[in-house]
Length: 395
Ligand SMILES: Cc1ncc(COP(=O)(O)O)c(C=O)c1O
Image (cartoon, rainbow, N blue to C red; front, side, top):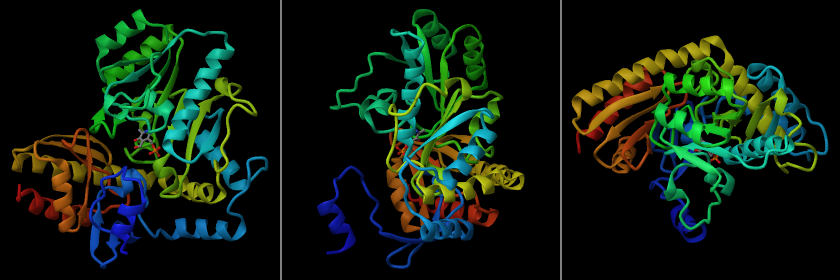
């Protein structure tokens, strides 16, 4: 039995997979089991920001595997302590981290911390504000704040305490705070799954303005936008504020499973022994790798590089918009970019594979999503867009 038929027979069909079997990666390229080469413009959904077979990542993982690959959280381990210090120092300065294994768990934990803080303050009745078109993960708590009904169908989502308003709608924002007792807000600064929708500065400013008079906990979901993706270590740095809680996942481990949430000091007593935990959270291998990731991505010259290549990338998208009438509205920040398409995004992605290019899709199959490894260079962009033009000419 080959890989495809084994997968179809034995793995639950929750994904529509593309018809290739990936076997290895090198830099910004992936290879299938027939040695076909693909330029990667998607990084495994914004995960492999440092690309594949990165010598420092490999070394960190292999060295740690030889030492210790798991310890329960009843003990102290160095990789997670060092990583926590880095994350706190680079964000909230005073505060704490919790480690888990995925993005959705980071969101669950962040919501638990926020809810418990409010509970300990003696407040019982309040609302959570979330946004239409958002995506925060697939577990029940994260789904309850995900503003896309298609993901709720059949799961009995308990979100009567969650209010959803349109993203970037300042009037709706003002009104909802007049009408409801909002104590938690959860927000993506760029809706990734939702279609690469970037938050407006004015919208953020209004939210921060409201925060001066109304007390609420602001959770910013940086699972897709974090770790250099927007040319800053975290996307919130573009907007000059500091969230109360930051959720992380995806690129933090460059492919090694890890999630985290970082909270400000005032929230640190909300979760105490017994109130939250994870068997694998803070795994030594993932944390050792994440330490390398943070060191590499935080470098000034690295972030400048992301900024530089992202400008080239964006120009190319604008060119495509001019050349192909079915494409419009290139948008995004750094290397999380999208363009709306009237032709099925999935059909384009499938054709792109035949040309040796991997691209992503978002929204309702109407957005082409580009999230290449951040180490991408000018020549890769040239190569990718040559391929893409060839593909688009077929539609
Ligand atoms: C903004 C955001 N939050 C949460 C998640 C969920 O992360 P995971 O798939 O690791 O559970 C995602 C995944 O795409 C995401 O983009």
